[in-house]
Length: 157
Image 1 (cartoon, rainbow, N blue to C red):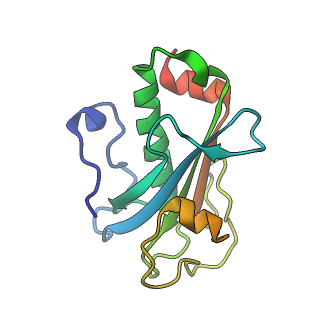
Image 2 (cartoon, rainbow, N blue to C red; image 1 turned 60 degrees about the vertical axis):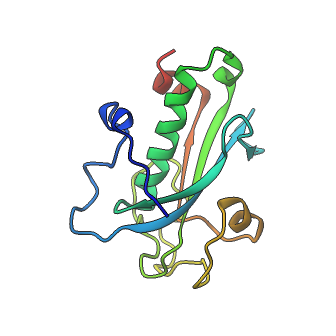
């Protein structure tokens, strides 16, 4: 897997988080971006690739924020304003068992797993997409949600 590395994204402040520990080994994450008209029913974001893999020394929560940040950069260039009233959600799973849940006690709005076990729910050897992990009922390590107002603010329109 190759980590995302784009100088334009780094210049926008969407590159690797300054909060990521420099000496922390890179971890492979699977992610899934979903949208919702009401924040209750979620479907895969079909306008762009809705999922993928990311190799990062950051935490699952940091990766979720980076994934949404990149999606919002794409929305800035989108002439179609259908996203103005849409909720966005990024689910992230660590595919490296040794990392487990890295956001216990996290103060990220929308994080789902605070207080859960430190062992990853992804079985060893699985390198599956976020969509497949979700369909198997495997709880993500981090979930970040943005309301339509937050999306419009982050997109800048």
